Length: 319
Image (cartoon, rainbow, N blue to C red; front, side, top):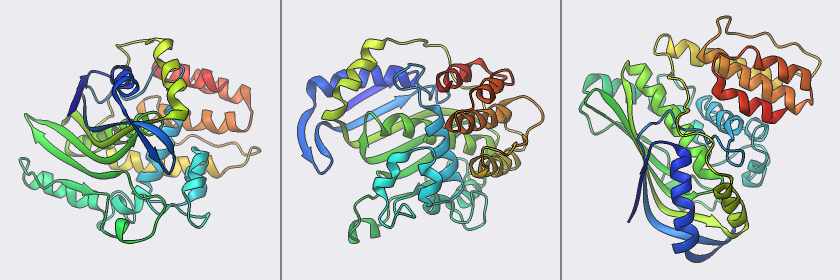
């Protein structure tokens, strides 16, 4: 078993990639040749250090888009394709994604009475020491049916220990180059949402993988990432405000929908009047929209309205 414990996503990637490249076993798969490590355990001691700050792997927009897609409970291809075009190759009907996590986790909405999330929160509030707080992603039907793409994630477990919320994710398979950075972003954000809903702090994030692999076509990309060097070991996302967490998530989901579905001639009004955490998230979504429309001036205007400088390089890169 390979175990890596680091303080940030970049530290984990810079430790993991050389091990895969040097010690990984050659495996031929339906997606191409790869190097694979079996039974890998990654531990992120600071879940807020979830974003790579390098030029090569700094992908906050696609991670944020995937998070909101999941939170919305959607399986719609058009929705996630807006942020991550390669999802089109995973659709069986050109309209939906069979393995989408949103309908499995949040059903009719993250805070709806039928969602796994709602029952998980109730369970943790009822008994803080419970070991039953598990969100199930992978289902028996996934291996019974004939599907090209099924969820890579098996489950998410949440444990409250020493007044901190720890999150343990179990994966059957993980693409170390494309999938892993997104997974860390999405799952640690979900961990923080659960923690804020309960009114406690985040603990560690644990990521256990059956098959951790790097495709041959990404070898040079991984090497370029390593050659780039680390830009910072001290920057991380600001903590998510614990107050009005349900209301703010509902607002950001509606705001994202308005931004994504608006055409280039429409002026999208901001939902968050006060500059802060959720306002910054909204500005990132606006910057992404404007950059897709090649509206450089509008992209630049979002920079002056940010409250946290961590996000500035990502928007500048879109310019």
